[in-house]
Image (cartoon, rainbow, N blue to C red; front, side, top):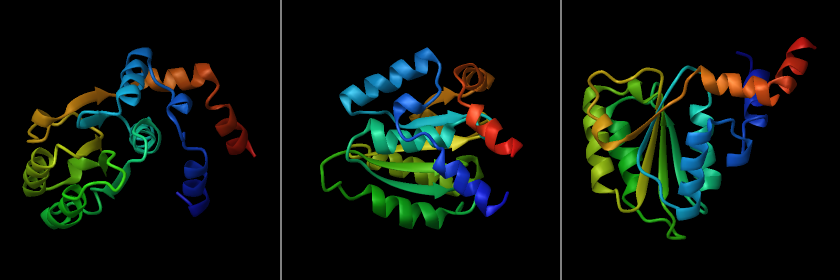
Length: 177
């Protein structure tokens, strides 16, 4: 992927809940979270490019107003030290606005087992002020994290909704030039 492609992806990434292409059930859930300003800890599972990270960032920027968030790509920073230092230090402090703080861990299936255990402990200890949104490709088989997370599966239906809604029309235009 070229630098231009990554910038293009960020430029056209949905910035609010209305721009997200979601099935009705998922949209209703997130609209409820927006009205209550509370979310559970979440695990998004689905294929690459289906919208897991985009929805996580929309939650942090639009669904939970005034939230502070920390984004970590766990395939790059997958050790226990990342959890003990970066995540725990972020999670243990309160937001200046009083809003929830959000930790987004992309590709969380890349964490070592020790890091997953440390993350689970951090999630439990700082649940009063911090929520965790974890994204991964496959359903976890032996993860210690699934006990504390609400799981949302993304599937090809979301991609079909994109095509039907015309969300890919701009994509096709740029790719053909």
